[in-house]
Image (cartoon, rainbow, N blue to C red; front, top):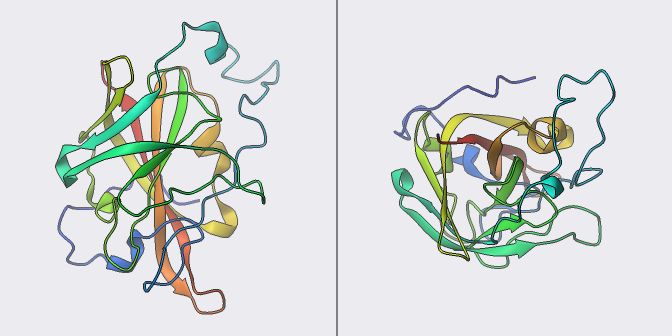
Length: 209
């Protein structure tokens, strides 16, 4: 499995632009994205011997306000957030426009314990909201503004690219002991058979202290 903490530099040199694109992304002359599969359960069960046996469901915590805006200063992202449910094929819906990211409403809200998931297009006829996501580095700040006026602050801990046919669901969705964030977009070369990009890029972030 690829190392999830492998980081790229912020310069495009030596790193193919094609590696930017998300999900079941379509070719570069249209929308780039189809979403990764949803988790089997929004609140996965834990075995008695799990090393996360002390995990407490977000249902046991006070309610956290809905996320409404995503800001990533290092790559000049400042976007509203759509709420994303499930598509007919049980994958997560994708944002309806290229310039707006979306939050998976079946998972934790940003700032709740667990991994909140935000999706965005990398290209849709032109570079889209997550076109520069691959350039994020360890320690870069990710801010999620919420409906009550509060902001959840995260810092990037790593990133990885994964073949869509082997999407790392456990890494992305499995419960965590602290609030975390996953930013997901398309990556890899275009599969000539499907016209879609072949990989997902996932950026991992943890809530700042």
